[in-house]
Image (cartoon, rainbow, N blue to C red; front, side, top):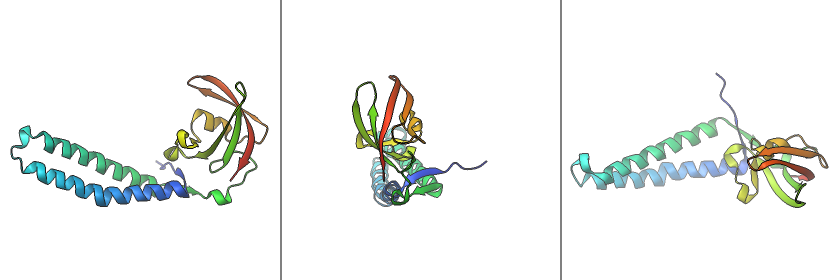
Length: 158
């Protein structure tokens, strides 16, 4: 079975590398210290500190494996070389919500980097997927949780 590529910008890739480094160095040491401390309390059958520390360790190790898989299967998008003839991952877009006449600016990113509050929408989100392939002055119709929304592309840049 083919492994699905994860689309990342260079910025997103660097952030994942930094998170991975922190988890492997700092967080692993912290959790090892918590486990050692909890073991000093003795009886593990009723040691909630130990159970909590082991659960935290599982979460950290799971996230490490997840990030390593994302990085291994990453397809990097270099925004400096993204064409702007139509909306694609890596583009910065300016859109107009047709019914309210409100303008928004977003960067289209892969799903791992999505952060709408910071102006990054995923290419697989309802709005992002509706916008992919659109050109300036074209209308994208997105089926969102709040209903069908129409957006006019009014600008595409890097």
